[in-house]
Length: 102
Image 1 (cartoon, rainbow, N blue to C red):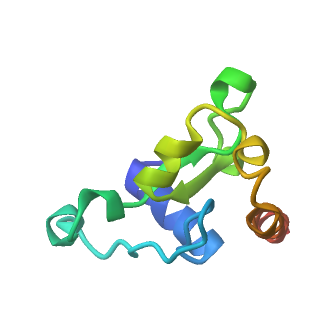
Image 2: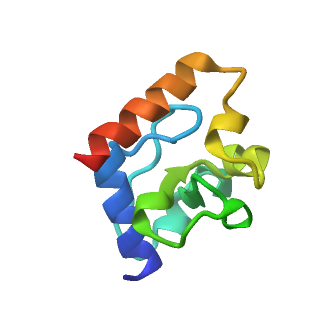
């Protein structure tokens, strides 16, 4: 699976929302997507929910889409550690993961 295909699949799976902040991501539409973005930070990135450093796998079930800024702030921490001070977002993330697993 290419990176683009992975992003498309994750976007459809999670409704084109950033996994960490919940804001709407820009849906990919074509090969020139980067050229049309106002800022590179708006381009969706793939992130490991459980970082590889912490035993996370390179599988689609461990990938989510997020904004570059959110990904940078999360760093190599697991999602539940990154969001521990935001219980509302953590609960939303858990719901997203549970519904996607069905």
